[in-house]
Length: 158
Image (cartoon, rainbow, N blue to C red; front, side):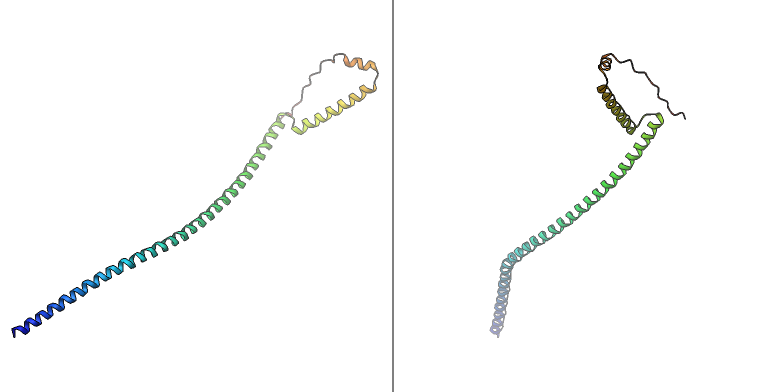
């Protein structure tokens, strides 16, 4: 009977060895398959990642473009408002300076232009008279003119 136990024991040992061998081979097969499938999976992940990067980069560029447009609009609006305020400030300053000059008796640009026009008209009239008068008058013209009188301008008191 000892032989049957030995045979049973050998059979069990052989079965355990065979089972261990199969487990080992299954593990090696899984490892080999994972290497093959793993590289394919890795390549697929890289491809998906590149696609995602393009999408997010495009979205970021669009957002940046929108932000730039908004900032340009704000800058333009601010510039327009600032220019309007400077224009108002300039007008106020010009009005105050004009009033101060008027109080001091300084003639305005319009006053000077009107006087210049009157002087030109008078000069034209004198030339016409000189052309119509006799040679005696022409000789007077060659004589030195008397010195001009100085006139004092009155200022508004007050």
